[in-house]
Image (tube, rainbow, N blue to C red):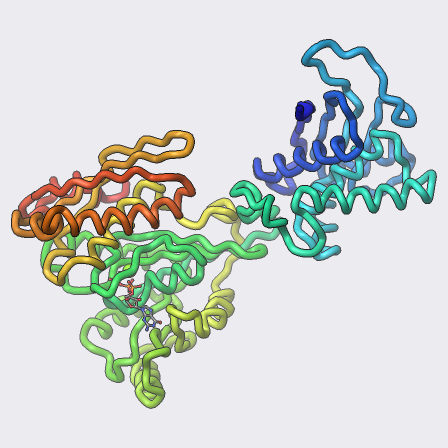
Length: 477
Ligand SMILES: Nc1nc2c(ncn2[C@@H]2O[C@H](COP(=O)(O)OP(=O)(O)OP(=O)(O)O)[C@@H](O)[C@H]2O)c(=O)[nH]1
Ligand SMILES: [Mg+2]
């Protein structure tokens, strides 16, 4: 039977924000150390997180050393002679641990390993102290503590080489766990361009996750989607926007409002075009908007994987005459060519400002919105030209159980004839949409999904304010 230790954590510092995952890794390390030492009764340990100044004071007081140390252990038993009568369900308090999180960040950087490995190492090291080992008193103990710590960390998937053992790759372990650095920098970047140039593809590539749906059909993206990319001390907040076009209905007007508003309030613009040689009217309009905003702009020429080189050069030349772009970068959002160069260029727009989002967050979109979008993506991909623009997907029911999410979505279209096509002969077309959508949704949620799709007709919903509102195209307050 597994022994249930009681581990209490207390945060007394503000230098570094600790996530719940980091705390749970620390607990896992403590449990693993006790198990490694074959302690066969429940133990109670309290852990306090402090900063360098606090640990320096403690160090001066208890050890007469006036320096900030990484960790201090306060054993309750001498030489690890753990003793005490335990009643059923009780745990034996074996001591307290104090960790300077600030120091842990510094040491992780110094040793070139992850912060959570450092945190786990300090926890293991101090548990061994509580159990009576002392590296300052004996060389044997020093050797033993070093080797045991390495083995214990390996057992919980935090070995020095490689990040996780495959068998311990649980979701909670693999989310990116970065300590919040002290000098945070932030930039808001809007991605704009005509429909279908690859704005969403670029944002997804940077994030390494699909947060915005992509299709061959123009006007795929309908509202602003934030994609958050955090690396080291930098956080970029990208705003993917609907492709700029002349609106033909109220939905189109809403989309253009979303696109135009995204420019305001950002620090820089990434303007995406394809290599068409001469800028068309739509693109000239966009350039004028950018100029009016007075924001710095990088011109990105996308889809170089399928562009002819001479065409590319002429396009660069023609566009550079329109506006004083900060730089012009040919890329392929599909295969990632030159995206690293673009990211490097964007660093010039970072400001010394605290992050707006936690480092492991990649989009502001709620899960159920992404789910609705995935369904719409499958419809866009599987249907003929005419119907997709008149489609909206609304999640009517979303019930989460332990291993299963049950979802009922309604698909709105504008004509009875469209409804027939969406459902298909014997319901086959809709079944296909449901199958493909379910696969993606299961990947996203990491759970089994029960997906139930219904098709309804709402005539001209794209031109009705009321319907637009009901279908989720609301103005943000
Ligand atoms: N060959 C190639 N295709 C690309 C590239 N980037 C995007 N595409 C394709 O272009 C199409 C449109 O991509 P999206 O990312 O949906 O374009 P968008 O600009 O977001 O479009 P809207 O949301 O409609 O404004 C898709 O079929 C993509 O696969 C690229 O670098 N190379
Ligand atoms: Mg898009």
